[in-house]
Amino acid sequence: MCGLCGLCGAFGGESHWSTTIEDPEQAHFARRRARAYRVTLINRVLAPSRITIEDFQAASFVLASATGKRDIVQDLGGVWQQAEQMCGRQLDPLDADFLASLA
Image (tube, rainbow, N blue to C red; front, side, top):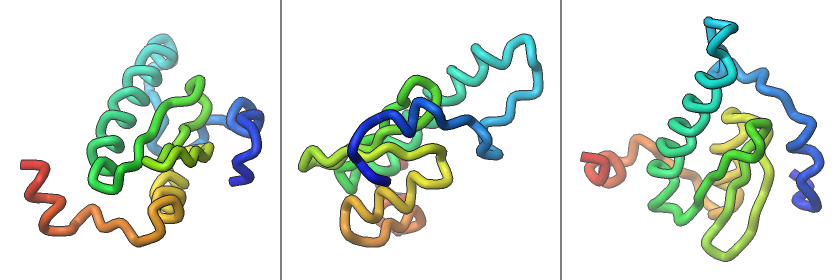
């Protein structure tokens, strides 16, 4: 990510496999609800790393660190890699302490 502006995110599409909606009549509303739900779940996973994610105009996501660094990620496929770069270490969603914190 270049991190210079938000223009790249405005032109991105939703081609990631996790964003497929079956019913074309409900696609817009279902996609918005699904994105909001994914953002909530991802924020819960990233919370121990002090990184947050926001939806950016239903076209991409913005990751933010506790130090104020922000990066645009086009789809969910890039979230994990960028989050690891931001916090400077590997993130393990199967870590025993993390899993215990979800209970």
